[in-house]
Image 1 (tube, helix red, strand yellow):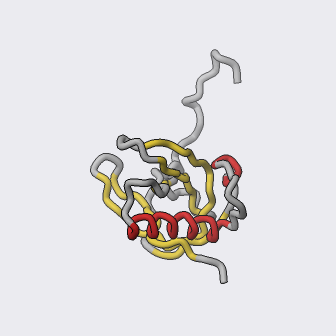
Image 2: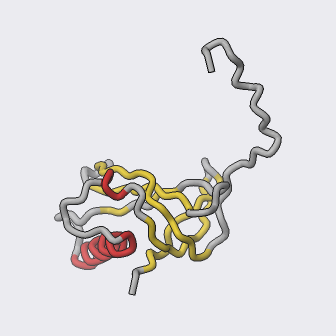
Amino acid sequence: MSNEESFLDVNTDDAKEPIAVSAGEYEIRVIGGELATDKNGHNYFLPRFEIVNEPNAKDFTDFIGLPHDEMDEKETARAKWKLEAFKRCFGVVGSKVKPSETIGLTGWAILRVKEDPEWGEQNKVSKYILPK
């Protein structure tokens, strides 16, 4: 396609707006992720997922706050468990894994639907399903 060709001549009659899937159990794939710092200076991991075999499903993320010194014992335990559940769900081994190394990994999760005022219905992870 040259710069002078029109891109509007693509037939879009069968185009569908991406949707949030109904709550339930789904196979999900990591398609991206970033390590970042929140407004309080605390680190977090934000993986981005797609739902396997659901081409019209919206992509979604899951906030995984990393343990830090300002957390109490209970908050630390929950943060560590969420990170461990992510690792087990996707078969991540070791502690020196970069976010880019998780791309393409698949696992199963129980998803819920949450209404976002800006983006409409969004899927969220209720629970990562751990292999037995």
